Length: 408
Image (cartoon, rainbow, N blue to C red; front, side, top):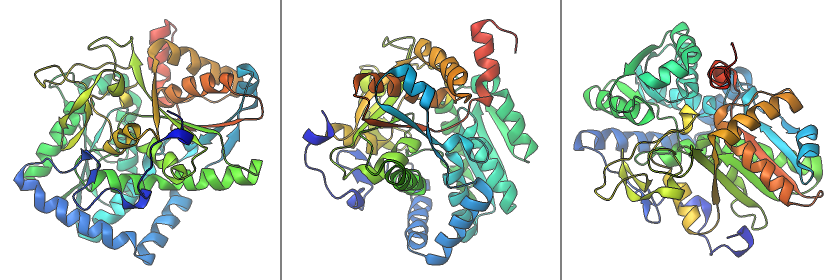
């Protein structure tokens, strides 16, 4: 359903409700031992959200440390290759630590300091959130422990070293598939045990309230900048926006400022893996059902008995069985559309972007680029597509070289 024909929507700023729900999605599904911590976090966040001093300090760090604003780059050769709409890339890959994740990590680290927390834990899949958290903790002098699936540690060895170099302890998780879901499980166990001294910097717009709201708000800077930049560059809004969706933080960060612009279509792109067969992908909207996982009600890849299915993606950051609740809500209401990109498409486009633009995108971001090229081909030359290039692909080069049979 296109944006112009979507169902009527509530005011974007009214979501979530007081209980953390986006319609039928979201909420709080955690052990009793975490309820006080979540309530404390929500109260602290709501206070700093309207605190001029906190927001000024955050803007300072985002500019001086992270490198905001990021460029909105006209990809002329990709545009020529597609033969249709103009393709712009929102260059979150240019941020310090290599991805959009630093927006949220800096903000939550500042919030943790405001709350008097000395110890930080985090989970990571592709390693970008772990690196961003390690950098923020090093900057602010906080103890840092990052949980990462053992399989992800192997395919993202560079980011493991980067985290350790900045003083973080990286704890490998050997359970299950040894990927992001298991890393989140271990981080939550740690938080239950050490809740008085520890803040959990969750890395995406997922989990129990207030995390989906809080992480979204910390990434809204992406969309605010993009809107200002495209108006300055083209004198009008884009026709379409495209972003990859694992949990969905980079996507909701871009989309949120455009939700009330009815003529701007939005596409979230999930991980199609080897194709939409059980255990071979991580496209929740293509093969999932409503359920509860790790504190949140949303679309989940699960079998008929409610057991979480195996997932697969060439990109560690999208290799997860659930999707952020706000994305589920806007999909249900027809405001955000969803597609998927397969591993083969991603590997081809990863190389194409490097050859044509001199930009090596993260494998996660390349999923968005796959669909962005498809959309550009389908549109007239006077149309505009913005693709969120959420991270850079340095971390993925050795993995891709191995897959393609080259020597790194």
